[in-house]
Length: 105
Image (cartoon, rainbow, N blue to C red; front, side, top):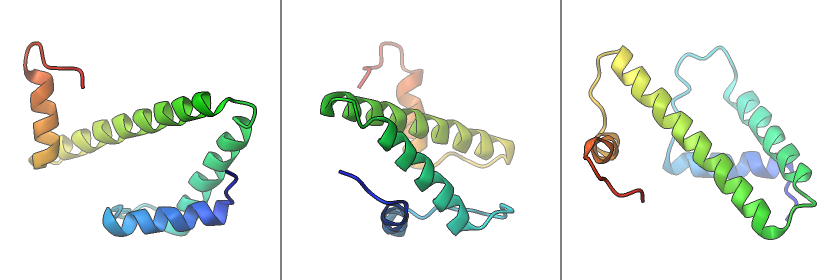
């Protein structure tokens, strides 16, 4: 299912309505950042054109998992750096990691 960069940017903005991104004081325009990310992901999708549907889904799931992990790590580092408490969901997730024998999923 091909998608254009503009369509992906629009979808990103729709998702952000439910879960806004805090761009804070980054020296970059939000629209430009979305465009760079959308372009990169469209290029990745094009590069997977020869993949089977299953391999494409597994690759995209792996990429999403890596990005969520990276986001979690950066979020926790930022909160710790500023001496702020972790959010309820983040604290619950990390508490699972602290328990010996915690389930993998």
